[in-house]
Amino acid sequence: MELDSLYQEVILDHYKKPHHKGLPVGELQVHHVNPNCGDEITLSLAIKDGKVEDLIWDGVGCSISQASASIMSDLVSGKSVESARVALQEFTELMQSKGTISGDEEILEDAIALAGVSKFPARVKCALLSWMAFKDAAIQNGAEL
Ligand code: ZN
Image (tube, rainbow, N blue to C red; front, side, top):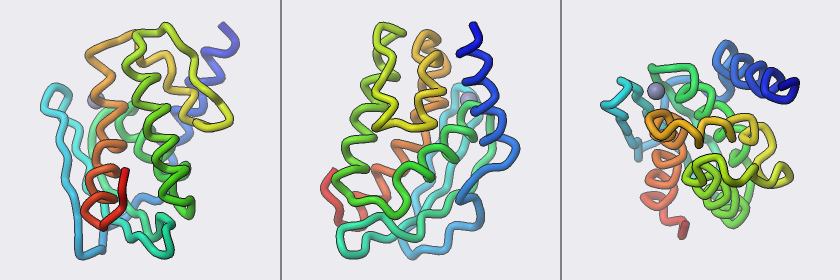
């Protein structure tokens, strides 16, 4: 139970003070929507020397979707495309696990705080929205994810 409240605190911190949030300025912008909940994410980034750079996003929606965008952007910004790919895969598996796995904290860092979301199918799309936007944007920038 203690762990649960710690996780909630991480999510609330990211929701209240989102990281890498601002007006997406890149030429290639993606806009993803989760109509079930009304969440929206716009995101742009650049791939430079095999690394994810200049990731910036803006969005509206529930605390899960917005916190997840902040957490995701921390996790992949400045990292190699390969480590972003690994994190994306790990997080997607975790979200699709229906609570059966707890995730690898070394890979997921703060994203581990979203593990509990996997037990609520209706909220999984909220948590995955920004990650799918990231994947889309990275692919459009020529990354292989
Ligand atoms: Zn939502």
